Length: 451
Ligand SMILES: [Fe+2]
Image 1 (tube, protein in one colour):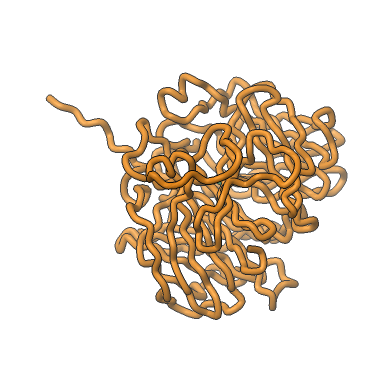
Image 2: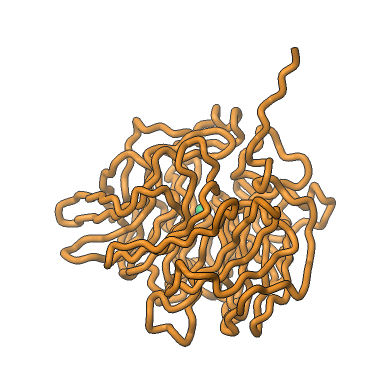
């Protein structure tokens, strides 16, 4: 009797890669694209080129950027391009890209965003790649002054007040963590080592007006696991979990650590200084992280954490126990109090794939209400990004939510634009793409004014 190894679900259906880079112009638009949207919607994810390494882990596939250019109410083009990482250029026999040597991973598959005229493609454990507006890989990001030990993780934050990029990197030897601040001119102004007790996977963080928050959670480095699953972290709840609060101008000696429930958090929604010497952070919390071809969550809910700096305690309150992730806000409020937050539904159970849901959510955290938009059977949304409408800029939700929706029936993907003030209503516009876009990770709007 012969047996066949179970197929890796992250290489099947719409998790599987597309084989070609294509360029298509003058896309079909249904509805009416707002003329204020002038720029590019960009989204990245893993898309292994050729035979993937075995064992294949979803987090390690070659990064591919998908882009849609919008201007004048039209959708000018769709492009998909692999990021020309060291591994990919070797595979393709293409010229190597200039820039600092990568410390570790080089997949560049997790996030893509605009920063001070640059388009950056990011993954933790390495230096970002700079891309052209047409998604060609230009170079690895090299600071104009200062050092960036171990690169930058995938979730740096552009401070809406200063324009600085706040980020961090983590590594496998002490001190395990660095906090970085990069000025718009590319100078590294801060690169502060932060001492952790062990090497952990730290995917994202949060900033407030005065502080930086780090999630020290027990998804720990393990070389044996790296050999088994290709991804070097395992869930080790015996280590507990802590939230670190660092004054923005502080050093390693100034960070305060607060115990929390043992949990893992991928993407905080936002954080800010609250009343009575508190810090508030809204964050989806997982009770644990499974292993395998991708980290599978155990029980996922959206919580509000209130850090009482006087009492030295964190109060955790469930805001919504519906599984959801990929939190976003109006990013002009990053670090400041927000009323509205946008998330996408995720699988309901540990055996579900991440994009099992057909719903996205708008939270009104003042009124404690939620608006749902359901794309219907077989239509699965990815992360939404909020884009402000200049004519409604005085309203926090005056703008649009944009994201990709994949239709299982047609095996095609579309870019959907929802009016954030009519979240449950019909989309304002849909841009029909000429291909499917494999499920991936993060997307952002990069207006012409920023890149
Ligand atoms: Fe992420």
